[in-house]
Length: 302
Ligand code: KIV
Image (cartoon, rainbow, N blue to C red; front, side, top):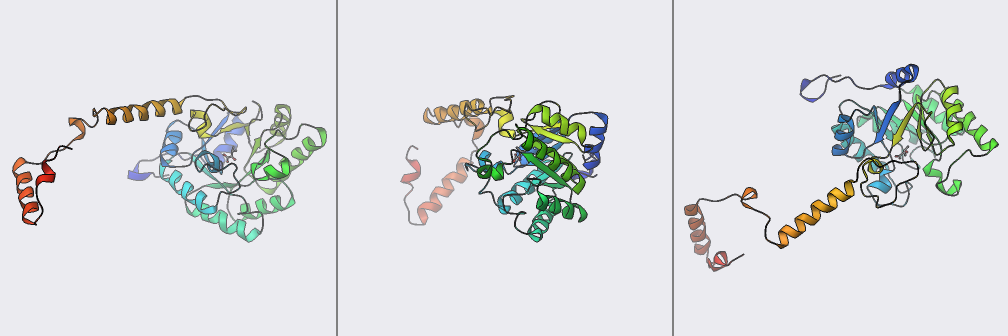
């Protein structure tokens, strides 16, 4: 695969996902929503970027993923594509972009691939979702499934809580996972399901499972960029997340330093300034004066 400027980079593909599972090597996925975050995630060696509809909360300030639109996601996907040269890019299909009509699902998934995404992710595992998965796959669009806590169904689930904690829901999750695999999904996210259940599903499936809050026996893990780096989330760390940095503190210190220096007139300094030849400046003042306006204002202290 050829990157910008002609340099060759080995792109992660669905075949890489299958090989990593076969080799028993953990698959690393992180979200990203713009070009700089995609660049950082790509350069850090992550296998795949999920352009998650979690952007509703992490970037757009919504309470849930429900208000996220196709336009929000398309812009984010295009920005991530510009930042990532090696990682596999999965576009999260937003609420109601695939549930109502199969034709919507096809058209909208196609728009993500046209923007440069390599796959789409859709939530749920009922018959309709399996059929949609099979149809997209048939059309050449790789599909990642998403089971367990599916945030687009937060109201139906009664909140953001672990799924599959009792026998029947647990069995239903296993059945849904097998159904999505049979429909042709290349991988399935398992979000907030008990570790033991995630392990059984992971061992049962030929395709890789990617866990978030699903224990350590999934075939890979996915985490939200902002949770990983401690950006914009305040003090609250979700139970399924681990904070590897405190970027909020770094940014806060930087901005406070800027505020202090502007108010103390120690920024900008000579290093951030440019100058005009004094004769050109004098001439400019003459021109300005000749235009009928006085030069006094220019001589005022700033
Ligand atoms: O939107 C998202 O970021 C996700 C992950 C949490 C799996 O769906």
